[in-house]
Image (cartoon, rainbow over all chains, first blue to last red; front, side, top):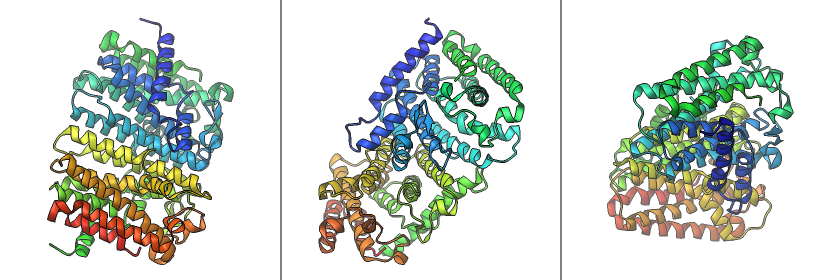
Length: 296
Length: 296
């Protein structure tokens, strides 16, 4: 088995190719829109969600040709959420992945539409390819995906995040917000990747779901820690942004030491949850460790 | 058979109830986001797309409990497109359906997210309910829907529309733009409504598709005529907007008389295309007539 770092590098390279192929070409009308969709999706990003999907697919021995579609679809949703999140009426940010944000490189209207079109593309991908042994399972996969994107998933989390600016909120409120804003799509990435392969028992699915929830939350806690500790150059996006914007974070509510301890706890919980799967969960375990221990 | 006007009024009332039930409640967190989604979707609109779906469902004897879901989903997409279209970085409009636009009534960030969440809701609706006799057909329905929304459908049409401001374009270019911007979702409404019922032969599906394309284009031609001839009060949205924005329209390219004649031709073509279906196509025929002869 290749070392995790090599595996991760290989997957990231593989996903770059998959996305480049599945995104509409710049030569297709409307050129500028397709250019913006490609700009925002290709050439950067940690590809955490696609890797989670691919790793979950290994757990259920799913064919890579299926899981890659799911992985591309969740990354398309992630890219759209970043484009819209960076718009002037939202976080108003100019830097993303070390490059100008989409509305700076193009213009606001094109960025808005590129995000809209990326969301539609995601649902096109998961409906235009055979992903599961039964079409019933595929409809269920699409439902799970749409819920994760909607007002009680990612978009809802963004709305709660907006409402929290300059407000004092409790830890459970912060956790609820992040479960939606980041957690929902991470959870969907894991579950959808697994759904491309052999069916899991309810108990197995429950364990995988618990893993996904822990990883999703840990991802956000670590993001808050890095936003506080790291610098803009390393992050490739503006550091200290949330604290400066008076947004509540795990660091502002728990303190830095406690937030780090909480991330470590979530990691332990995630790893324990998939341990019964044995060797087939190796990549999931390593991904959880990577997510918690990363420095950008 | 009840007269068309009564049928249409009944369907509009029915759809208001269906949408009110299917949209997340204002009492559900995040309240403001759900409030904005409901504000933009309920209490107005001609409900042309839902009616087309319902009428197409009559053609294939589809159960109303299925078609209403499709009708709500296409209206959710329509509502999202209007919210985003009205944003300052797009058409920057303050009036829609006789009321303040969503970003005026709420705020820009909430309007952006409400649009995003309505798109996700649409795909949630078509995946969370049984819509076709086979799950395979339902996956196909979802694919058709996603394509109609994406960069080679509605969002792509919006992008081409943006690029056309202050440009001289040809009639075929204008037609291509509208086939995407308005036509794609209208076509999807018709085909998806029919897909909820008994399967059509390829020839029948081709005829229905031709009807949908003619109606979609006619809808836009009439919109351009009304934008030129009607007034803001009657339209419930700012009149003369496209002409003032130096956007090419059928009226600016063909002249008013020719544009009206073109709409009449498209109507005739649409009606002829579904005539072989006999009485089951009555509502589709009447809807085409309504779309071309409306005064707002």
